[in-house]
Each structure stands twice: as C-alpha cells, then as structure tokens.
Length: 78
Image (cartoon, helix red, strand yellow):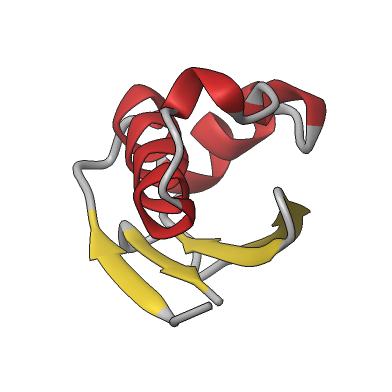
C-alpha cells in the first residue's frame, strides 16, 4: 500500500468518487468491486465537514486503508 494525498473540490460527491477510485486503482480492481463508502461512514457528515468553516479532520477506515478528509479539501489515504 502506498500513501496518497488528494485535493478535491469541496463537495461530498467529489470526495466520495476520489476516495473510491483512488483505492480501486491502488488495489488494481474496479471501483464497483469495493464496498460502498456509505457503509464506512455517514456521507452526510462528510458533506457537513467539507463545508465547515472550522479546521476539522475526520479519519475512518475503508477497504483496508485509513482515510482522512479535512475541511480544506485534502484527502489522505494510507
């Protein structure tokens, strides 16, 4: 596994897509072969985070990776 840092637009659909696609690429599988990201976290809460004016980071596990998303739009996958 390699660490990845992504910069995405500040809307949840962009984050969800980038997280799933990046992990699928790293694993050499199609994104539809991964579990839905909504099973790992509340995507509404993620949307609230990325729209927050506070400096906040949420970290969660997904498909064997640790994913961190902050309110500046940075996604780190390790």
